[in-house]
Length: 356
Image (tube, rainbow, N blue to C red; front, side):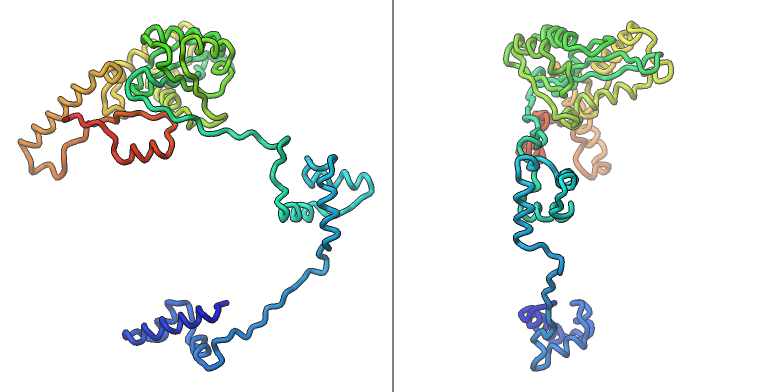
């Protein structure tokens, strides 16, 4: 239904279109209006909507007294923490009927009483704190993944720590169980290998028991490492480790069919994979340098050399280059679970210029 002001506006628009040369039926078609309706509106009494709107009140509508009875009942101490689907049968056992489940739900919804009470409210998990790595050994990410064995349902467990700035694997071990003790020893040894000092490092992981075990927490406090945890069942909060595990399990040498016969076999394979990943694998997120080169800073000179090669090729055949040469720059800051401010900064191009 269109009110009086809208009808006047429509008539003015159509008259303006006809003055400009448009046909009446085309102008009405664009506005979704029929010519007969337009002609009726243009009559002296056509601007008034003569249709009547009836206000129907259901005959079975609950009275105010009945609504108050329902609200008083469901807010009694015995029922206030229960949903209507449980309140109704409990009242029926007592020989009482105050309304159907749907009616009680509708009344509670109208009174804004369908939210969880404090006692039954599910726990809410906030997004993890955002961290930024400006160089190596500032933010590490670690996780545990299964390695299949010849026995169905039996696995070995690979503990893997990586530096999110360089993507280098800085520590790993394989055991036959998940344990906070094993994790604590691995982080201790990795900090010694990378010469990490107190209050230098943030270690991010998920919410598994080895990650939050008392042995692990005590070791992190002793080393001066700040812990960070993902939300439960949210793998996106730990994307670097998840990506690394995919690279690991999609490697051509990963034993999908033969699997790992012994713990020693698993450790030998992981040692070879770590050496390949750190020193041979050209990482796409690093503009195809190895994690080891990025970790030590050797990548800057290498990317500078690549840029020079492309500039020389452009000079020899400028007609083949419609745009600038390939961009070999990398981000100066690597973010873990960035907030909106950090994402905006990245989108605006906060990157290092290798030609500077």
